[in-house]
Picture 1 (cartoon, rainbow, N blue to C red):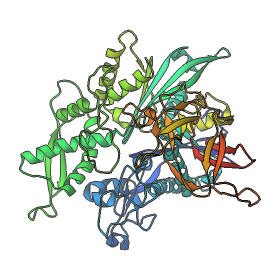
Picture 2: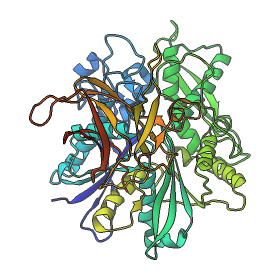
Picture 3: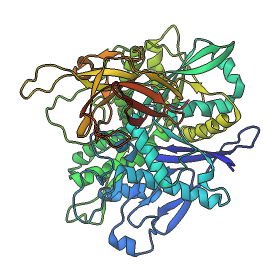
Picture 4: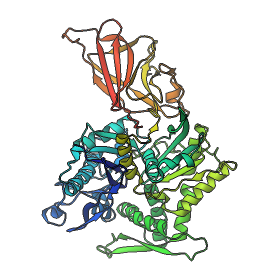
Length: 599
């Protein structure tokens, strides 16, 4: 019997675990204390688990200092600390890699760009699984009479995660031991709203009025997530409905760490020390702690500048085993972060999208432009939105100066309708997990729910007919098979001409999605410019190569080129089934991938 609802924030830099009793008349959301190694042979309980994984050496494994849960890895606070000391044996940002479609996320590719036979590697999928296994072990130790497999589980994902990233997250969760029957996804910005709703209760209807729009600006360790929620009316009662979500933006605290590392490297160079590549990576990780300390300091204008020491291990013959350090000025560091990530700009200023260099190293697809305010302006302009309220989330906004700069920019954009700041007491690091637990309780007990259906429109690529040209692929059209807002539990025939389906041999299926094209109807056909032009408004999700069977249910062979039409179904579990129905027989084929947009 389900006793608890569990909310898990699987963050890029920290994981948080919250829970509430289902039978309670009013939810009392609590945080789970997570035991973890904080130093060799030293274990402490913390309210979050750093999303870092360390791969110990053979010598470390033979000792008793680490006692890792897995024979080849250890996660948590000690892994975060080791990231600065041994960066080439530490994995971070696995969540960002999990949604990077240009690499095989099931292959052992992390730590990235590290070579050497003595350094093992694991996949982003397995790293994610290890974090969840550690959280599950903490739960089982605390509540041995309430196995995780018997509880209601809410796992949060970025609103901007595409279908394949969600499905991979689900795969990691199930492999770790979370129950597939009761596992649901909730978008992180929505979870932050639910945390606020837990605090204010029914009085939210006094704060938000009909026609208001709420912007959730979530800047975490690795990503920036933007979501718009509207206040609408249904049968005389106010409801919350998601209007739009932004694209997946790889900008966050990690970028800020790198910016501080660049500043610190300049200071090292002024002292005559030029860092080598290994030290530069180590410095990046060292700057994470510096950033957290600097952003948490008092930031009163005119206050005497303070400094923070940043150190890296020495590499020269006279420095082996020692460290070299520089003192970073607080005011200069904060100013660089403020101007680099939240610069003053017009709402019409567009972020830089492309690199000016013809070749680029394969790695995480970080945004070329780090100006979060420019990305926010582009998001609001694309959806013609003027938010009346703003809810901030993510550890970056612990810095008051960054909060103040963001609202100052918003006020210049909307001087006649200055957005109001919705304050939440849940904590910028804990609100997503707390909100997920509250959502799970609310879902079971009939509380407020945010509506909206699928946040994206989904399309399938159709190769055009025509004369073949040597060396030139035929252009693609994009057929809308699921419009934005399609509700879970619904299905529909996709209106179109007959389309040829290849069976009996390897076929390449291409899928696309869009957060901007909210008005496309089921069956809408877009030409190739929406895919290939610089102004393309469709994004390709994971393609699929598979061989569909060339036999019917009785084992009889069918033609290798079958005329079909599509039928789309979004199940209650959030899985989109794309059925290919033959128009000349009763044969059907199914392609499916997750597009869960939890309400």
